[in-house]
Image: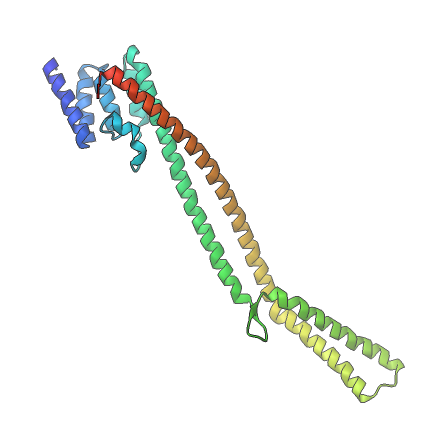
Length: 263
């Protein structure tokens, strides 16, 4: 390839980069590298094309773009192909790409965890709504947690039953009339009914509520762990983002010196 042809291929590759024709730009720069494997501008252009960057300005402002393209094999190939004088430059270029890939992965993981947390919160909301199906209606038409109704009813039933039993124990020593006998039977029967209603109709609902509460508590614990993980990843991502921003700015300045770009 003559110098004129090589120059034309360089210009073609740069034009293709500016147009976003990255696959074509890769082919153009690879054509140059087949003849001159250490060509700095071809290696530089190849890295830009591989990451879908039009120019160095795109590297600095890439955080505003959606997604990230990263080819570790190609980066290593470029570093190995670079001359000794250029290798430090391309290693730094590769490190920035690697950091950007790490930042992209962190943000992807954070978003994934947020989606998982949304699903958990939706489950908690659903089960809290299901919880209300087991509420019991009081005499005023208000729904209450079955635990609120169970304990007073069971305790009152127990007291009534004890009073009835006490009466039947004591009546052998007393000359009871029909009114006191009726009262004893009333306490006994009422106590049995109240306890029966508590354990037959309300207690199963109490158990269901406890199961739902336990499940929701486990979900909430899982949600808190996810939130803690998100905060940890966000801290790491913010630090890495600041580091990348500084690295890109410094690298862009170094690139201008190396390429002679006065813009």
